[in-house]
Image 1: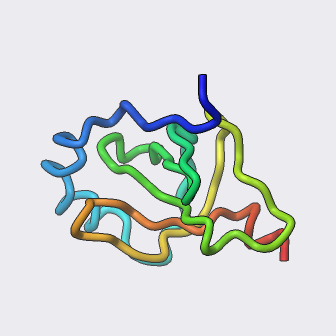
Image 2: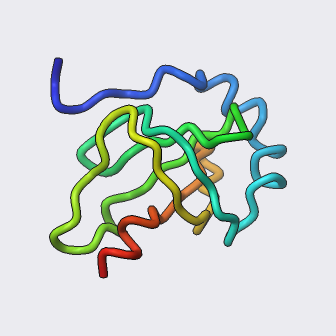
Length: 101
């Protein structure tokens, strides 16, 4: 297996279909928890607890120097910082990255 994985769940169709509900349920500033379901060179994808068809992305641009990506399957927490409408992603800043500074 490669170092990186792409999330399989939720499906892109599920994420797209529920996007309006996701944005309403997770306004900017909302604290979230979830499981890392995908790793890419640009960040980690998180299946957000209690909002099953939401896909969070913690972009490495918010990762402080010296911090590392959480492992696939890890439980993480963070804060919603933006909604990316064109690809239906909830942008998250992970708590461990905030606390690392």
